[in-house]
Image (cartoon, rainbow, N blue to C red):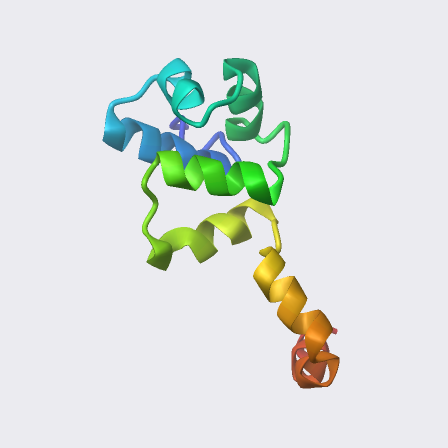
Length: 101
């Protein structure tokens, strides 16, 4: 089993992006900034990042806007803008709720 397969979905994305940049976990943590232990916990799936931390990580790794929804989904984080839209127009989300039931 490879290192990518042993990680959470978000961890696999993080590891692949770090490798693309040639960064160690310490390099990544310094770029975010956050502690290397916290970065390791998120990458290994032991901690779920807040939306703010997830955005900082994606920014440091230069994740394109077109790929960010995948990162949100992998982290299990609902973007604040989407939540605000859902709360502003709850009637429009009835079809979404039907599908999720």
